[in-house]
Length: 252
Image (cartoon, rainbow, N blue to C red; front, side, top):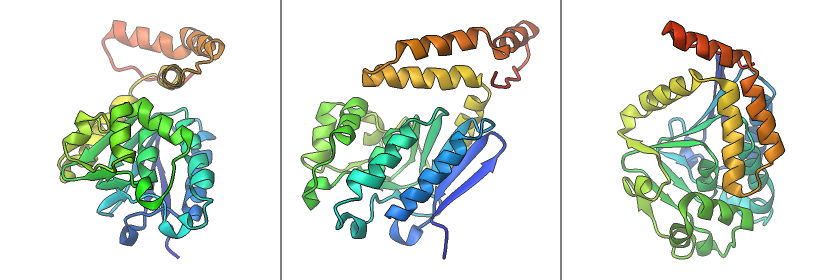
C-alpha cells in the first residue's frame, strides 16, 4: 500500500507531503492520524526548526476530508479538528506550499500554517452548506480571525469560489507565483527563516498566536522574552552584527 502522508527530514527542515494524487489528496481518518503522528515526531525533535506542507504531484494541494468518512458524522468533530489543533500548536514555523486547489477542511489546515504560498490558477472554496454541515465554532473562529467576517460569510454561507490573485487580496495567500516557481519561492522563505534565531522565532510565534486568539498567557510570554535575553544566541547575534558576518544560531 502506498503511504499517503510522507515525512522527509533534511537538516533543520521537515517536509510533510500528501500523496494521494488520484483523489486530489483527499484525507481519510487514517491519513489524519498518520499526519498527527508525524507532527508528534517533529515536535519531539529539537533539531527541526521548520515544517513545510506540500501537495506533492497532485493537481490540488488537498480536497479536504474524504466524503466516505464524512458519512460517519465523526470525521469533522473528531480527527480533523484534533489534527488542526495539533498543527496550530506546533512551535516551529509552518509553510504551506499550495501547489493547486484547496477545498473544505484543507482550507482550515492551511489557515493555521504561518505562511501560505500558492500557484497561479489555483482555486479555493469551503462547501459545508452544500452537504448540510455546520462547521464547529473553532473552525469558524479561525476563518473570521484570519480572513475577516465578511470573507468568512462569503466562504461558508454562499460557498463563493476564490481563485488566483483574489486569494492574495482576501489575505488567504501571502504570495502567488507560477507553478514552476513554487519550490524556489518556498526554499527562499525557508532559508530566510532558518537563518534567524530559533528561540526568538518560536517564542514570538506562540506570543503572536496568543494575542490573535485573545488568550495570551502573559506569564509564559514573559518567560520566553527572558529566555531570549539570556540566551547564547543573543550574544552570537550581537557578535555577528559587530563583526559584519552571518549569525550561526544554535537555539539556546
